[in-house]
Image (cartoon, rainbow, N blue to C red; front, side):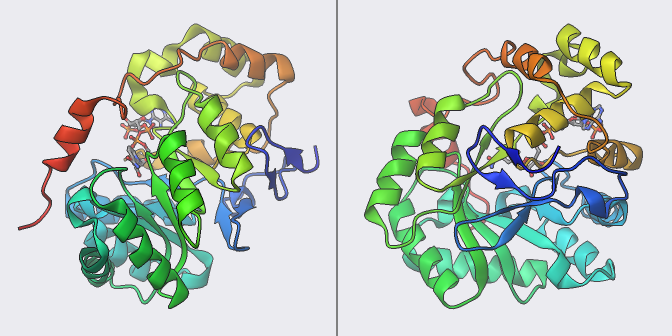
Length: 308
Ligand SMILES: NC(=O)c1ccc[n+]([C@@H]2O[C@H](COP(=O)([O-])OP(=O)(O)OC[C@H]3O[C@@H](n4cnc5c(N)ncnc54)[C@H](OP(=O)(O)O)[C@@H]3O)[C@@H](O)[C@H]2O)c1
């Protein structure tokens, strides 16, 4: 297959099919500053029990994941850090992301929140720091993120849940534009416009909820079942392969070890153009998980306090 020119506009390295040995799937995409970010990672949203999270992250790293996605608002940075440190995997091989919560947007508060996250993680540096939501004083937060980046505390900085207009505004008014925008993307919500806009500003889209959080009975959707049968794969693998072929890094979550492996085993088959189009037809054009453009979301997320 060779390198795939993705619909996200960037080239992903070594997307040749091959045996999935865990490390094979660690193909990556280059961020604007040259930092390589894995195409598949492991997300820990809603795994709030510390012991369970530590076990899951340990299992995920053992299965071959090298990117872990957490956030201050997930209340599990400490467990992630413990599992990372106990994994025995060289820190340089791992890509750890965490996020700044809305309550801490602001210049000084971002610097403080970063220190707190790093203390909980117990790591000397971070790979990617994201502004979790496009709310609060995120312009000041961004200037603090630029400082953290320039001081070398974090290898890359970005945002999350920024719709195209807020992203473009930030890109046009800051010294360092975001390198990543982590947004909801899955077969029911392709975010084509957002992905296109990101492409034109050199921002890498990253898919949260890549399996649509299991909603709308995605694992039994007839289109996906049909495609899965064509390849002797599961519907989850078809969806994750679709993300990979679009060139969009994805961070699926599962608490089950066998599914962690399943979700990585997506490099030994290729979706045809027709199959990609069949999945394109599943797009409903909006989220049924969260509406970032509704005032109610701004109000709700601004009122979530994660500390005193
Ligand atoms: N930036 C943001 O605002 C934001 C928002 C949401 C999520 N995220 C990030 O994105 C990550 C992924 O999103 P998500 O956790 O919301 O949802 P997701 O990964 O789309 O879906 C997770 C659900 O799929 C199930 N699942 C996973 N693999 C499966 C498989 N092979 N077969 C059948 N079921 C499977 C899981 O169940 P089991 O655990 O039972 O397997 C779980 O219920 C999060 O963990 C988080 O790191 C970021």
